[in-house]
Length: 168
Length: 432
Ligand SMILES: Cc1cc2nc3c(=O)[nH]c(=O)nc-3n(C[C@H](O)[C@H](O)[C@H](O)COP(=O)(O)OP(=O)(O)OC[C@H]3O[C@@H](n4cnc5c(N)ncnc54)[C@H](O)[C@@H]3O)c2cc1C
Ligand code: SF4
Ligand code: SF4
Image (tube, rainbow over all chains, first blue to last red; front, side, top):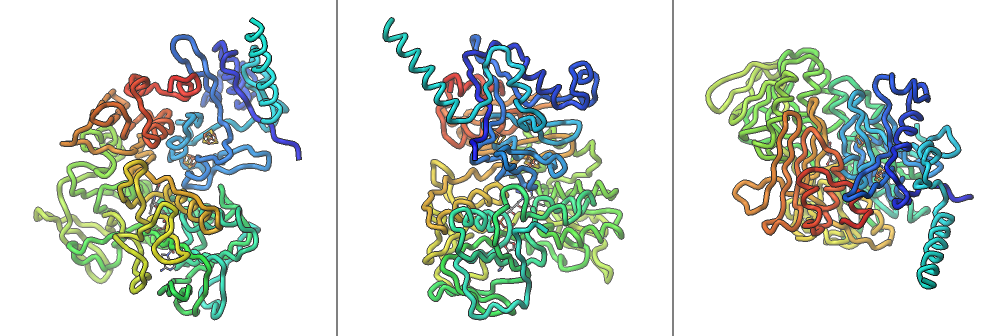
């Protein structure tokens, strides 16, 4: 079986343009268009967050669909499960909005839909080949790849940089 | 029905049967253990025994049966979330009366003796009914713990107009809101100066109190019930310690829980309040383990003994026990005694770690706005985060929990903690 792909973040590439958050909200809107999305109520929510770190760091954060997903084991209603692609999903019908998952996820990537009183998170865009945030990122800060392939590339990249540094 | 499940009931003959793994208790801890065993041992027979008539369910959801918002079928555990293991045999109405730890057998009420190689005690807890309240044994007096209780409560609602709730803890609040939703008048009688005294101090609770008042809950603090007044149709009122009386057709007692350990009377299993466990969730008898509300465990770091009454802890500990039972030696990391998230009326809140600071030597920082409140508790030196209460805004609560539990040094991130602006980006960029 081929390894499932994941969303990786290259922090140093993020310029904080928020394209990913807009694309995510649009993808999770009813109309799936920017124009339609902004006039919908409740306002469609992004599931990716760009955090700011002093003095000028920007860090995109999104659910990692953790191997040992603490949120899934903590959920008191059985609303969180893992699908056959390894994606950790929140079943909105089952969710009772107790926020236990928010209390255990260290990454802070579970949103609280206040109007609906439900938790929401990244669903890896089931209708798309490549998640909307990754497609929208203009700088390549978000990468959709398998663990092996991504780490190989990062290793190559790092070793190239080391090589360059060595050569001066 | 979920294809991986198999269920049996009372009267199924178990004489001279043997199961490699026996789990007593089919709730958070027991079912988490059963499914974990399956991940590591595909062959060994796993039998889960429960005295309840219902197949396993998500216990924290039972208030929704009272409010009518969910049906029992919507709370079934098997097949949901992480509970998808196969070939786990659950026997309902199977009360374990006694255990012979030398012969390694359990005696099941009405259906004989069952032998085990490894056993888990996950019998949880039951509501504590204070003996000083007289006359509790009458129709219409409840202590909400099981699906069966919830069904009975839902029935009683039809003949009630006023419910009196004794105790201001979280479970009773949940029951109170369920009854409010059914249109009853609901009065909470709380002995402490404020509601939720286990989870926060009185001055921390004002936003929650406000939300409860707005929702229409009546609250009497600093007073206790002395006895339940009743006639042949059941409860008709409650007498209070300061002399007053309240008429009502329904009473719900929420005065904490006590572990179910009686079935171990006469065994050599070490009981001190609950079943005492070691770092590997084992108890003092051979090949026997304990997890969940019934177990005495420890706090991370200090190692102080505690008992908790939390679904999340029960699952975590049950998973750890399951690994150990299947031969994958795994140390339990311990747990915070307070680790609660919920929403009361329109107010979300999280309470974790050390939150009671009155007359104790901690560095405490509080911040209140019209809609939010937070209290963060540091050690006396101010170098480590010990606990936190967030009300109204619970953003990133999980990261704070991580910092508390990991006893991380916080000097360089303390400002973010106090401002409630800490996020995982600080970790990723090496600020933490
Ligand atoms: C209304 C309500 C709301 C709650 N909300 C929350 C919440 O929001 N968050 C949270 O963390 N926790 C919550 N809790 C607490 C949580 O439900 C418990 O901590 C959790 O269920 C403990 O799990 P356990 O497996 O240890 O035992 P229990 O759930 O108590 O289950 C014990 C099991 O043992 C069986 N049993 C007992 N004695 C015997 C015997 N002698 N023989 C055979 N079987 C036996 C019972 O049938 C049952 O299957 C709530 C509880 C209630 C009642
Ligand atoms: S919500 Fe958080 S804990 Fe759960 S899988 Fe995603 S990153 Fe992991
Ligand atoms: S908020 Fe919803 S998904 Fe999260 S733990 Fe509670 S019920 Fe489960």
